[in-house]
Image 1 (cartoon, rainbow, N blue to C red):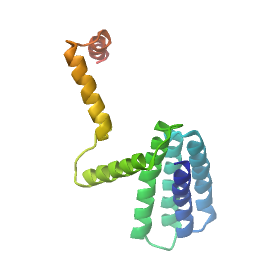
Image 2: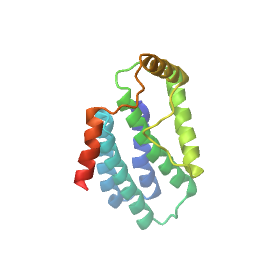
Image 3: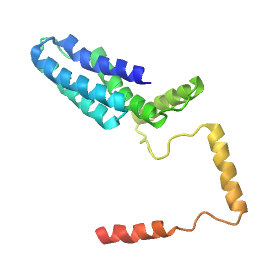
Length: 172
């Protein structure tokens, strides 16, 4: 996954330099490259996001001082690379050290495509409830049934949950 993130980072840094090869664009490109390289090495979404921010500044500078106008293919490439690099680094961070097979990667790609399609259609995405693979959902369903069979309804609030409401109301 780090290799894919590195390729996406290279696209983000080099595309503005292709649009306008200028020394003014090289400084934000260097900053973006360093931040993205450090973020990919540490699997830190925050560092990669800072690098993405620098690459957006680099792209804006390239378009502002360049003689070429905005090209749709270049803009789409930047947008897709921006979205994917953050998703790829987050995916790599979550599954660091795990053996991920091709089916898991295919499921993740399907999730990204469905999410993008939903966003284009105006449906919001709840990052707290990502779609689950069927086998995992079946396991959770069995666990819930066993808990319900033990006489626990699952609706009782823990002391920590009850206190959150009191804390939240005292902060307002």
